[in-house]
Length: 343
Image (spheres, rainbow, N blue to C red):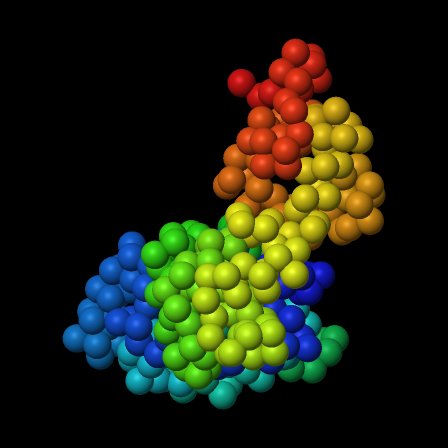
């Protein structure tokens, strides 16, 4: 899903080409997501042993955690071809039919943002996933007739950031569903060190740690920050990314030691200063900082909730004492509005 292009946004950016070489190739290259990796290993080995296509798989979770990379890894492990598309690009049932007729036995069809498929497209996908058949209507009016085209056995790998928006019948057709979680500090450092070697950047352990701490547990963000810090090191230093250089570069980008950027801080300050700590509605926050509500909900809130900086209550968002402390603002716990929490 396209967002606002922030450097700490997990969404893809059109004007920054993704470096495919940085993607892991095999399951052994993946660090973190151990539960998902272990389950996929079993599924892949079982599919190889039976010489059958792997079952349909659905990945869900915040953007930038590796859903697309996992689809490529599965294809590489099974030595099959992966066909990549996205829900918003499949506007008509005929678009999906054209894609499915080019899929060969064992191939993987990866559908990003699958929750954005139209209902008419979903109706075509149901029999394709369940019966490996394509039902199309030829002609119009009384002369119209239904034609069924048999398809080779293939695998659909879906990815979504909004599982709740996925239609129930479509969700139930996936034999395996995996949630991807944010990565821990050690995993992030490993990813950054690996990427720096591929980019030819000189990186110290302190530099990797500094970037990892501010990457919000998201590999896509870490890779973007690494590129920008590499540029800073080449221009302002001798090219080596140390802890100090990484800190200076990230401070210049207004990304603090927890990975919060200017918009994150504006959200917290709006709740605290304009609305006495809350509760305040999402639409009101968005209007106050001239930001899209969907961006706040999908990009900012998950991380702020993870840090324990905001609470969701029936009446709206509330800033927690941790947010006050992080911003250096005294917390007036005797304010009745600030005590209005969801218990």
